[in-house]
Image (cartoon, rainbow, N blue to C red; front, side, top):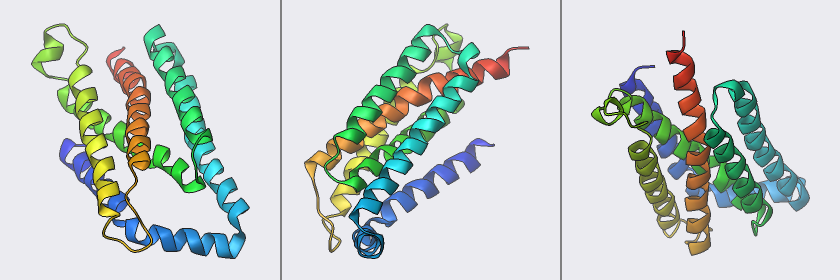
Length: 191
């Protein structure tokens, strides 16, 4: 995929992520009234489990291309992901990890892809530091913006704990994206 098309898709993802906020409260209430709070909890866990399964499948498929550090990053991200989702106060808070983690992964993959020919990589560095920092900063800023926008919407509210969850989700997303993107780039370079 060309860089411009990729960034358009990432922008669309961010717009969708931020634009669903006014309706989430109503959607959550409708879900609870229709199927019950236990169903909401099970659905949230199912989505979280699906996110974890994706990481496990990616890790398994790329295992031979990963380094020891890559494997450690994937394991660390899974532990943070599990701890964060298990300690969430409400079922819907678990979705922060999926939405913002995916955002961070997309940001890292985009910047890592555009930086692959950079002078940093030609100088002998792996070229992952700048894309990772950009993904962390921009992903965290979008997570903060997500919470700030909730001040404007009925049935939504700003919460510093949600900002923390968003930032942790971004960290997890980058921890997953680093080894996955690097392994995919190694696969494309190998004969």
